[in-house]
Amino acid sequence: MLSTLNDFKQYFNLTEEEIEEAKKVIDTFPVRCTEYYASLANRNNLNDPIKKTVFPTEEELKNTLSDDPFKEEGQSPIPGLTHKYPDRVLIVTTNYCPVLCRFCMRKRNWKKEPFVITKEQIDEMAKYIKVTRVRDVLISGGEPLTIPDEILEYLILKLKEIETVEIVRIGSRLPVVAPNLLTNKKIKILEKGEKVWLNTHFNHPAEVTKGSEEAVKKLLKAGIPVNNQAVLLKGINDNEETLYKLFSTLQRIKVRPYYLFRCDPVNSVFHFATSVEKGLEIMRNLKKRLSPLALPYYAVDTYKGKIILFPEGAKYSKTGKGYLFKIANTKVSLP
Ligand code: SF4
Image (cartoon, rainbow, N blue to C red):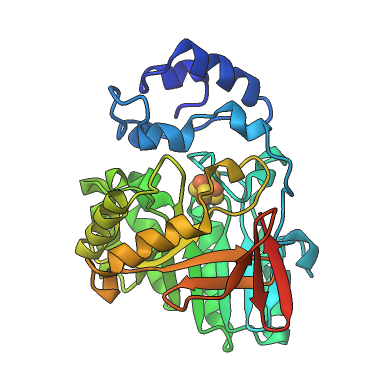
């Protein structure tokens, strides 16, 4: 595991200037990366997408936006459980991730003491989910598939027992950053859950390797559908050719490209955002080259919910400070 700047020097071509910048950031936002993921970088490329995903820059200290613009924490009837939509809840199981992605929208959790959901918390959440007749449970983190297998099994089987719960979606980046950690035992647990889907997060074709392909194959064989939620990231994947390759490669390995999100307006993250128009232009061009099965929805997330920009073409107007979207009778502005 890489956890110091010296560790990073062994895998990436870093200039003195980059190292000096990173030193200023790591006390606020630390670094961590698996050896596997770091080994995917091309050392000769100073702008390597893997390096940009995991290596800090001073930009992280310059944003002055909210740490939690979607008010996940304000809508928690039970700590760790967010209930924003009537039929859905989000469970945050841990704040640990084997790779700390610089664009993480839950970066605020990096600063908290390490936590892992307990069986007592799961019992309390299960009671709440039963009473509120929730249909769809989203399990997230941090990286939820790093919690101990015993707790993971307890959670998955609890949710299986609840009649109203029809789908359990796990948001995991393990197939991308550490496919070796997706053990047969873990896959067996997910298979036992019967209602489990996995939403993963590939952003760049360089992340699709033999190892990640094998991990996906095992999930699919266990009856677990795999979808991908990518983020459009400045300097990492914000061009037509990269996304063409990403979406077509994902389709080849039977991962459905499900969403491409604009980068969220989160503190220390928003410097990765492109304009709304840039994403639209890329998606419109990709529509001419890819079948609908390989084309994700392009969307922005807001505290009022997701707004689909492509293919629906949600209406928005430009303001001096950014964008104004209309959802039902409400207006939402985004930078
Ligand atoms: S794996 Fe996901 S939760 Fe973890 S740091 Fe990356 S984006 Fe954030």
